[in-house]
Amino acid sequence: MLLGAQFTEYVQKNVSLYHYRNGIPLTTKAAANFMRGELATALRKNPYMVNIVLAGYDKETGPSLYFIDYIATMHKVDKAAFGYGSYFALSMMDRHYHPDMTVDEAIKLADQCIEEIRSRLVVAPQNFIIKIVDQDGAREHSWRRTTKD
Amino acid sequence: MSIFEYNGSALVAMVGKNCFAIASDRRLGVQLQTIATDFQRIFKIHDKLFLGLSGLGSDAQTLHQRLVFRHKLYQLREERDMKPETFASLVSAMLYEKRFGPYFCQPVIAGLGEDDKPFICTMDSIGAKELAKDFVVAGTASESLYGACESMFKPDMVPFIFHSF
Image (cartoon, rainbow over all chains, first blue to last red; front, side, top):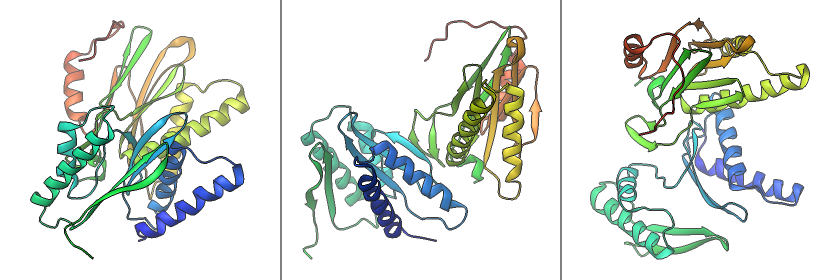
């Protein structure tokens, strides 16, 4: 079985290669379909044990989010979460998410999800990172730390 | 839990008067957790042929992509659309090819054949065709659907404006 790091590096290199060869970047939808195809091909030979939430911004279509699980089920969604924390995060988002939220509202929602995970999940991680993808690209927005290292 | 029940699905197709209907649920689940409520299970192959795929979502997506590819090739070679009966045989053959490592899908095929005569069929995950004159069902809710169809179905029904709830 192959792990997430191997898969993500493989995808990164192939996405760059497409850009070099063709002069234009892959759209988010195309990248998601590429990932799904790779996962599906590997599934019955040597599966990648990786669940993916793919966020991207395209000039023509705006932002999009794709849910891809390790058995290569792909779906375009407005909100997604994986892992044990997903039960809490998805519930929070089902309650508070609405389309066309501002960045500040979204950060507030992310904080509410983190708060739930921190209090309810026995094996909760110590630190969280919030990243944003928009017309200016992908960047780290902020951290939510409980440990200093 | 069975691999066929991993994502959950309900599919039904019925024959009416010079028409057919095909319907599905739109839930995408991972066992008991709901991921989305707008997942597509029914795909148009051409104007008079629709394919519904129940079972594992991943295999449904793979099979759909493969079948669209095969149909496009057929269109290029034959310069016409595939008849539903032919398409059903193609799906059956593709599923049996993977007899000892199958796609975890149960397809429902519905279309208008020669002279616009409605055609429906379903098959199991290894391609055993089941032709029916009235209705076919597939998916995790198949038993409930059988019950609903057996009691509600009557032949030669006509289309009416469907209100979604």
